[in-house]
Length: 322
Image 1 (tube, rainbow, N blue to C red):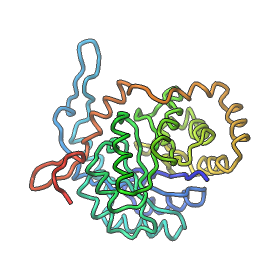
Image 2: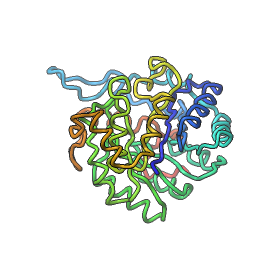
Image 3: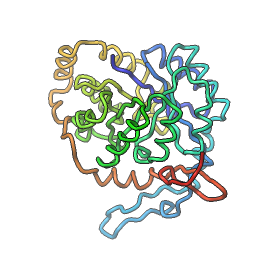
Image 4: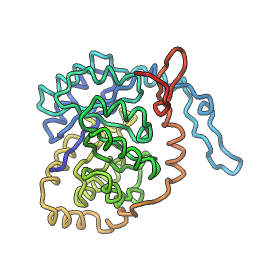
């Protein structure tokens, strides 16, 4: 059976009541796992090169512009307190859906591991697929690790898989495209087959534009053999949150769940009817990262870090944190 992860991201707007309503809607409409994010604005690292960005005279972007002060203020109002994360788990248990989280900085791993998870599963964001010390620490404390692989080089993915195997952990590798939103032509769903050499559990973390593309890429991934689909999820209008445009609604979640229960022949028939040129989203098993993905990797990898003795430590650095 395909597992569907409803990624709440920060669509809860820092509001516990809205968080509870989102969990209920996800559970009622077929989510197998509801995912939160352990993000604290105080872990946002100030990197001056992104305050102004850098663009060449011919218009080529070298460094994206994302001023620290504005990003900090945006994140601060979305912060959940430590007790809110316990509330999240309790609400998921009450709604009979599995809770999971993504941890964005290594200094939060011990806190996350101390929470009363019914199953010890955890998600790693794309930009930490190559944060090897972080992966080792998570593998020590969680039984199954879901790992997104967007904006990560092939050799880094291979090393990540090796870390999981050596730790004796089961894990899932999720293909994704770290261009927000990504187009159907960017999906490159054949990449899932390449990932299958490392683990039998592979999937697709979908960031296509909901208003334009609906569930097409997610359905195609299921028909192609994905056993995990992750989609951002919201109960708000799409313009009310930053991730709203790539977030599916409860009705769409229900539709995706029902599609996942069909046999492959029926799925394929439906896909060919809904997406006549569906082969355009297949792509190839391997490919170079696009300029946009490289720019995003430059910014998001290292966006959050851990402050230890007044020194910032990136998630991939070997400095002791735990």
